[in-house]
Image 1 (cartoon, one colour):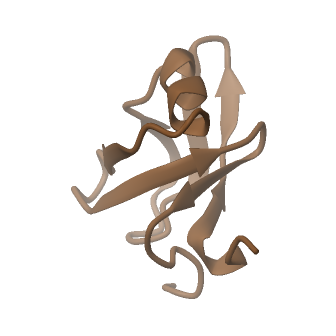
Image 2 (spheres, helix red, strand yellow):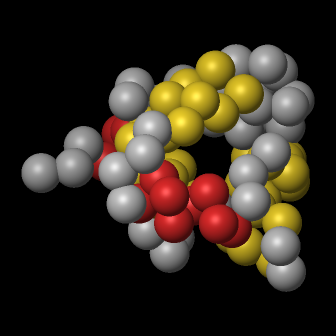
Image 3 (tube, helix red, strand yellow):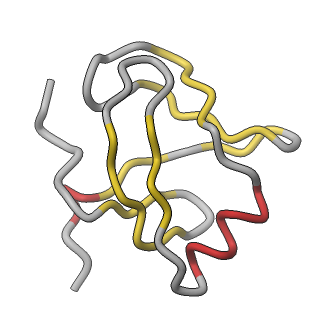
Length: 79
């Protein structure tokens, strides 16, 4: 079972990937340094180091779907 606390919702607008708020610094509308093609690679099993541009916090993404990013560590409950 996927741990819900390790997930974070995202949105894709054109070729940009956004999150509504950073789970670490709470900055709103953060543009992530990810490409839509990388989301498919992550979903297919490739891990990706994601560095949040707002606060430079690092997490490893281990899976994605059409709505959520799945990290190797908890993202929820930090605020």
